[in-house]
View (cartoon, rainbow, N blue to C red):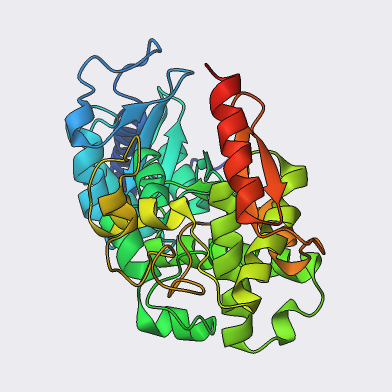
Length: 366
């Protein structure tokens, strides 16, 4: 049996170099994998919130203790990584930046719930998927645009000023055929679920779309009406909204107002005077109205100016809208509150009957 000849020296050197290179490569890969695992891991492997979490960098907390983190509109992935690191949610923004370069997907603006501790890849997956937190916000019936703006700002949906600016944008009002300077009266009061934050214009459009859907359900003619005719109904609905206490009286009140309009009689609605004082003059809500209030010369004062005011005075809900579209056929021209606890009114045909109802109410409340 012949003896194996040793490999030539050059080959032995080559194979040795290859083996060493492979070993070094394996060590490098293992080191790289270890570094990636280290930097990808949450700052606090033992669980719970990181001790360095600083809400000033953007996060907040929800009722479950999870972290709420906002990706701001137009913010870069690098900016997000810096804030995540500063807040103590990730170990290294450099590793975050490396992931951002390797992956071609994009972070979506919005507010997200992060269950911490979480790895960088887990956090990134949440921000890329874009499943934002939806905030429940209720806009009550009868509030004005300004009060709705305050509710939305309090819920951190959008800023009050941004909402009011969007609601008075001429292009937006024109797109809905609203002949007024703002969307007052044309945004439906309801419970909504919005991401936080959400662009103010999209909030306004969502509420306006809901409004027109609802009036189409209330009256099939609504969307085919001329915009001035529809506007008159919406204005009246907003007044009824601020006047009625119990739903069954709303269509009767609407009938009273239509009767007055028909004979060019002043509507004499206290709600329109309150609107001037609180919304247009920016004063506190009055406890009582004085003669100086109801006698002031103003286009919205229905005590001195016959007919409807120039625009709606509130956001009417279903009851008031239905009453304005379908008023009761009534002989009445007056109504007066006679049972404050129950919210009941006395309706009368004549001024004498109206005055007598007032006397009875005073007697009954003494």
